[in-house]
Length: 100
Image (cartoon, rainbow, N blue to C red; front, side, top):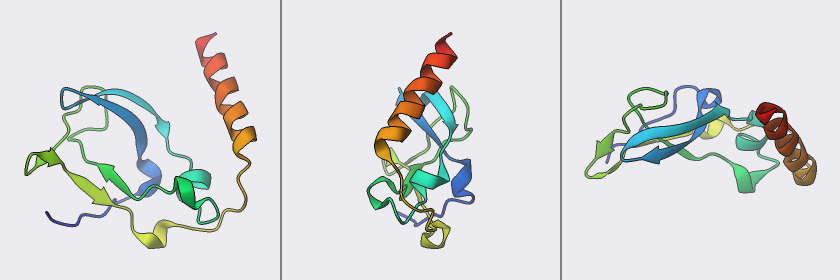
């Protein structure tokens, strides 16, 4: 397996994969949580690679496994403390507003 690097870590989305295709996508990751050295338990370290970052995009396989790319450690920064309870409330509110 070859080591690959994520080109732009801010242009990554959470998603779901079904039958080797992207079946669901959220918005862009939040650097304050996913690239924050002050919130290490939530760091994004590697991502799966798909042909297109769209619903239906085919996930690329390598040796019968999902192909991955690593996040360059230089992409991580100190963004400060993250209040997990507050972030959970913000996410809940955003979801409720989207449903309305």
